[in-house]
Length: 390
Image 1 (cartoon, rainbow, N blue to C red):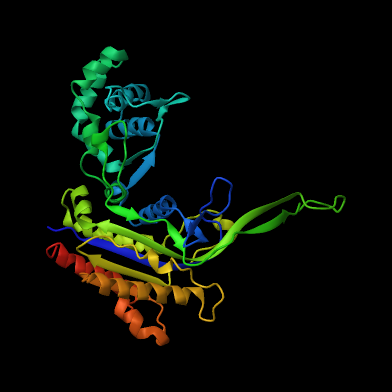
Image 2: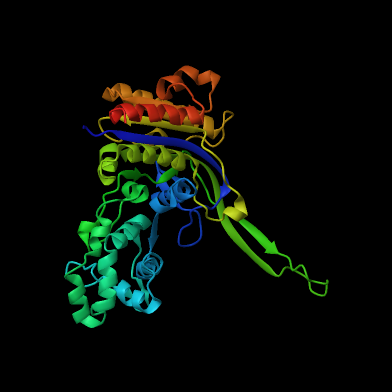
């Protein structure tokens, strides 16, 4: 099967907010096209997408998590699945975790302040741990009863019978298959991400602003004047261009060739990418909005990010509004680049705000504007054809 790329482009206007801040507490920025832009980091957008993906949209047993508490998690699963006593489960969990050895044949490093934590977060599926424990249930119970649970000798004895590493080489949940996993100490546990996510940039120039606030003491009986606390928080507002791309072949391989899981993961990712937003200062700004345009271009050549549409920034003073002009400029870029390179995508499927004055140009670039449910249905049908009708 030749590789297929599912490119997702969105135009998303966000009101005053500080949803992804830098080390000084200010909204992240970048210079592009010679002017300062609002920026949302790819890491922040991926985190928001992954969190939205997981909230009630994935079966719990197929869910994934990222944590440093892997030793504690393994102990808890031993207690739950094998009904082991806490003391024995703690010793056995340590033996299991210590089979995960780095390239120098040393166990993964633990936090010196808390032995129940690794020194970095581990991304895995809950079902992977449960399956491994259940597959070795009798052997683990026998070892806990008759084996050596102490010291280097006990570890050497345990290592001859068990490889916890095997738990994480197959059966990846959708999150890991999509976003990948990097374990520098154990390269063969790495999973190449099937998704690329770009840093989101405003389509126009942006300057941060500051909100000066005060907190009033509700119990003040007028014996004191002034506020109990004062402070300030930075914010900006922006129309953002967001881009991500999924490699169909890479995702299929990461999911062990499961075609149904591949298709459902793509559809859930697209919905999550479109609807999710980073949550920084969410309670202060209530910045949740939805994109004015979501277009998916399914290609057989390579992923294509169309951010160059905004290298010349959208003017901030305009009757039509920056959102409308941003959609027009993206349409123009897609049309021009498609003609220049001779692009022939497999499909272009979109939902967007229609503009009568630019209807032909938008339709040429994005196709007909569909309702979001119909948009997902059309992607579903197209993926069926690419995956052989499964």
